[in-house]
Length: 177
Image (tube, rainbow, N blue to C red; front, side, top):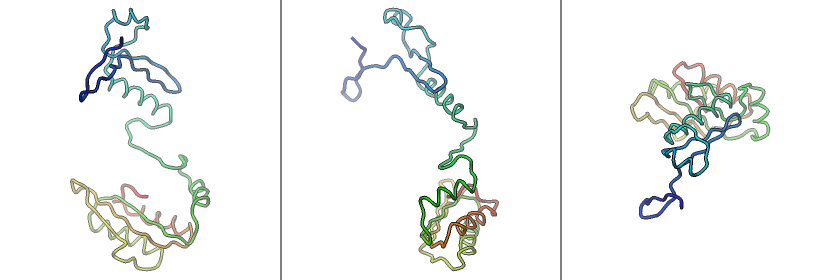
């Protein structure tokens, strides 16, 4: 009979073996089981490790095998080659112009950063943006400020590219979408 435990009055099985795998490796971790119990169950003996460490090791292996750079927090949505041509091909499939677009940015510098991002968008579209279309919020510690501008009408994908280029000119910019 499998071991069971109670959680909030509900009887649940105790998982004593965690099998984690990626494309390149498969490893079994016996979590908190005695050698005697493993011998009775007929399982191969693997290293005993706590569940958090087992999960961390497996996720690290998956990250390495999928091209993620260690010690970074990079997260890419969309084409991974970061080329403008790939973006244009995707944009052509999913967007129509003229159309409404919202631009978001996170950076340092408070109100001056917000004004800079607003100026970048207004400079490309050629008209002032209403106050109601600009929202900003400081981070919890006040180190960063997020700004959302939009929706604004863009005439073509070239305007979108120019807006993002104008936003990137500000060295205080940390992230944009």
